[in-house]
Figure 1 (cartoon, one colour):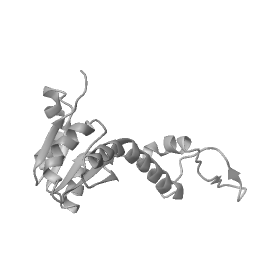
Figure 2 (cartoon, helix red, strand yellow; figure 1 turned 90 degrees about the vertical axis):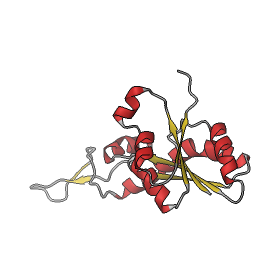
Figure 3 (cartoon, one colour; figure 1 turned 180 degrees about the vertical axis):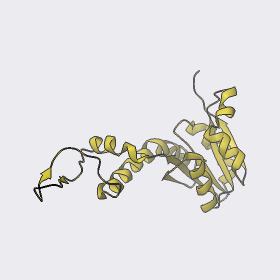
Figure 4 (cartoon, helix red, strand yellow; figure 1 turned 90 degrees about the horizontal axis):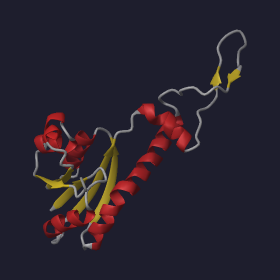
Length: 174
């Protein structure tokens, strides 16, 4: 059985390992996934975090070739964007997926982790389809009545998934 564990970092690793362990003991596999929304508007903040600045801007006008060093929003295709987003996603994968991966591996289960850029519910469903998983495990924050009305990621995945979904309530103190 191939199990996809989708997390935003709030699932308890021990609980996940306890539930997926019996399902995957006989040659099964677990993929831990986090889907991060990385809007292009965040790029300026990311650039400052990684001390990366856009190239200087050429000024148009009477004097050809004058260069402005004023900070500007670079075009969407600026080559540093992809590298910066890749660094950001790698860091998020380490922060969010690695603790779960470590605990699941310690339980003797074959596990890998992945990170994807996009809308969480859509990204989880796409990963479940492309990886041909048999089960999706996702957390529920247990926010109460409004959670279903507002359309949390867990609610959307549960409603739209074409495969079984195991919803685990996160162990957080309220």
